[in-house]
Length: 386
Image (cartoon, rainbow, N blue to C red):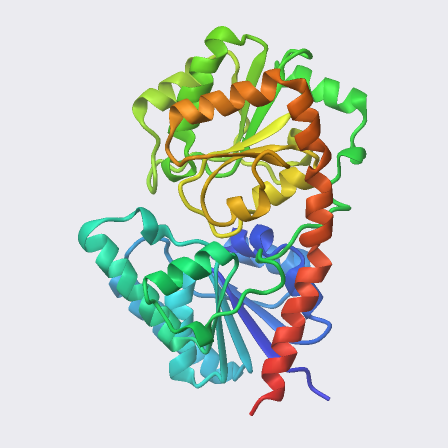
């Protein structure tokens, strides 16, 4: 008996590789899976590495109406040929292009996961346009999966779609976390000492870590300013920034770049395929983002036994409980961020109490296999409906 066909679409291949790591391989047991994305060479690498068939469609993360129409047409033709039972999209551009093409091609189950809403930081005519795109994406979809309760509330508040079209899989998250892979026990004391030395981090320093894109809407301007002020009075602290700058899409302030380049205790690593050892050598995650869906970084840090300082936004405030496994601060507040960083780094009793709850929270609620199984149940339930 032939397996039903499942097509998963993201704007760029790194989302297949990181956001949905391992998930498509798991689904291959039950479905004929095809991955669709842009960046042809990187997409081919993903397909070869994971033994998954891939199909290239030119997609951009910017507002490019003419190119998007061409992408819809190309994807429509591909879907008409493949006749999938399920088309499942992730990320905003893949969402509108994928859902429209799937609707036109007559795909019976058109699913879209919302893992964040970039429009929340937009204003004026751009915000109106992005709101319209979001509404159209949900209209063409048969079901929409916000990956956090907070996102679901935002969607309903903005009247992007009706409540009966929305559902949260498992307890949130697009992919859960593999706690056997993200475990602090995987690294020896010697390995961590050597890595710290290589990064020029003194052994006595309390290390704050940020993992992700080094951009404005991740709160990097506030983080760098807060750390710079904190370090003036707390010299035994370091800030480790793991990720790439995105100067074209969401650049940092010039003064932030200047501080990062000149500060002796701010270390940048660039993009890293494996971030685990960086978590393992650190003491606390700082994640002052303006908006999120359900951030994998906070899940990863928790599994690595790092308490987290996060902003009071959806996703973050669902994973972190204030004063239990981390600290929650207001968005865009340098003073509150600096105070929280100082509090967690000097109060050993507080630090140990927060740290003791981090990994248990992850293993009890967000284990990857549980999330995969819940999504599989959803797929199977949909396929049994007429």
